[in-house]
Length: 347
Image 1: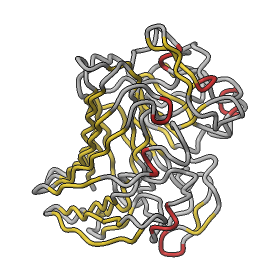
Image 2 (image 1 turned 120 degrees about the vertical axis):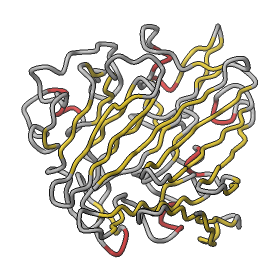
Image 3 (image 1 turned 90 degrees about the horizontal axis):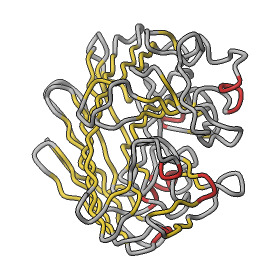
Image 4 (image 1 turned 180 degrees about the vertical axis):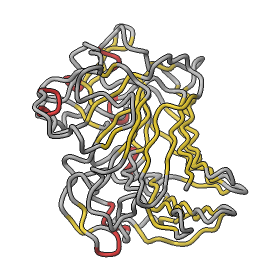
């Protein structure tokens, strides 16, 4: 079931709507047309009590800054691009410099896809958000038509289908930047969350969180989540990769990636009984432990703070176009972008 309600106006007078998706099992997802943001996600616990498990805000104006990108659809290119540039064919593409004075992060922090109002169409148990990008907007070549469809199923799946067509070869790497806390937004920490990631390698980063090109094994290091462990168990370890980015903020390279949907990660909270399985057809997932969440007031007056939520952002590897040996994310008029990520819950 899908219903719609008004959620406010942007600074330039555009109306923003909130689409409410419910299933027969007590789940509820709320998606706003500003930034195609997943605003709320209510999931029952083992006693049947539903709690909101994604960080964010109660008012639209609070999303206008949203430095942590709570719930946002990031695009055209998520994550970091070294030097803020890449080459397609023989053409150099220059992006805005917005990270460490010479890199690009999440395309554009003021005008990226997560700061625009999307058109929306409701389905039986879904909402499809659409956006048109002009040629060279944000630096990327080609006009682009993008859709993101959120579907809430009676199998307790929150399914996100991404699609984009382009008029010229360009890099596309969309993701959803939701921060999960399986105990609910009142919980102050995700350190006790149990996590498994089906990845035996990760993308090593430098001091600016840019991939070096090396893909070290996780085995024998604090980066290893191939067997379930608490997020907080090794997060403070004396390990260079963790110290560089104040904890976990790394792309994990999915084992056996072949472009088909598969289970890539599982998060579990013992106290509430909630479990989240993550499926995708993409080669990577950014595990971010919320190390740098800004301290501000979030939902219901509860404070947002570091390590209060974690992200599992499915993606192509960061800075892919500058690494020929990474799975490539250049798309063309004859090769459109299409991918699916599913967050499936049980309790």
